[in-house]
Length: 540
Image (cartoon, rainbow, N blue to C red; front, side):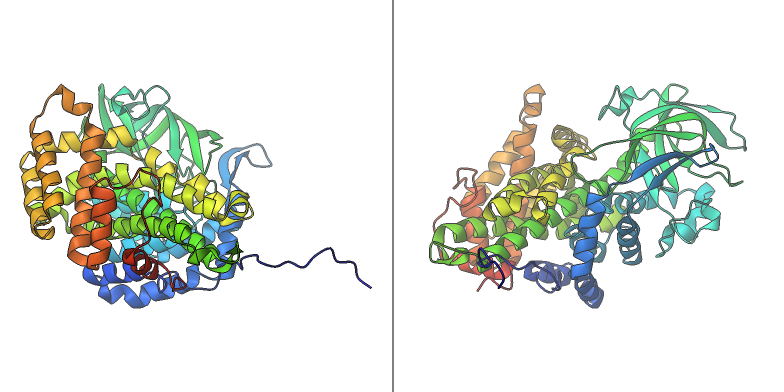
């Protein structure tokens, strides 16, 4: 007879083979509300694919098998190749085919939110390629990129762009000595490339995102002024450009993706935009990349929340399922409220950013002022949200065999990339200083959306007065300004679009400062049940 010490009971089944989009009530409402209803069939199809057990397992495998630098071929020729897990290529193929490398739109934002819940590393090249389109498409000398940039085909071959079915674009900005201070760049460009109109670059980059991308937008000094250059991986004649990969970064998270340190040894590049205007040229991209940081962090929060609720519904402790215990319900509802506010905000910002320069003043203020504030706030909030969700699972959530450990390692990256929290908050102040009328535009729009809520309007008046007292002391309060602005926008959006009990809970427990800052410190109420029902299909 067999020998058995015990039977396995009270362990939670894996959350697989479900539709990631169909399970998200808040996202479905937002897609229709923000004008992307025609994309619903595609989103349902993508949600079905991403929820499959084999796709979820493939994402975990890509994380466990990070890329490897292969500097030389077997004959000793320098190739600086990067060997990726096959899952990396599969997720890039999925993302490119769903338009994630294309310009901003609400439909794209929704697909981005779905993709990021399963595999986040591939979002980096998709984001950079999407953001580069507005710059590269506006300059006639890059007309030859039109077809590969607009393609919905992922082509991993290491060939010149004109021989490929599609392309990816990366960025090379930061250096050892400068980091976020891009004016400290030391890489230099000089005329005299091998082809007329090209420049020769010498220098280094401390973070070179996705070194196998077909081209990078690089910041370098031209006549002492920071300028932007298009630096291809392969030159028109097929030869490898003189971009030498020094090493791949060993990162905390985002491990399926390759981030490199490189040196330019007379690398060939084409000028993008006006000479000396490189930083302002790249700032145009920042609105798109920062929006994607908001969406990416929201996706991580959503993925963690779903795992936590699923676990609580199946795990029995102290005689009953965790989900039916009042304190656990309070924690889960608090997390769900955070996620709902982030989803509503992300989709609204996506519509504003996609509207472009011809948008209404309110849309422009959302895109220019609220986007960096949201990048600061939502990315910061993602860390405690994912940590709290992990704690719901206890020790099972802490081990690497469960997906929450990977989510937790992934979460800090969006606060770091595309400008840290302080950089974002100072950018909010800079935007308001350059366009002081935008605070008034935002205030007027928010007042209409808040429906006369006295407490919220009082907060809005105080914020407007605080911003009006411009001066050196305001810089020290930049985080407070950005946080309060985002919370007011989230409150206004929920008041406008969410059920009243959900909006009331947000205003009471976020805007009015009704909590200690720790999730789950509010009492069981009718709002808890509704918020949980909106968050997940099992929450009944």
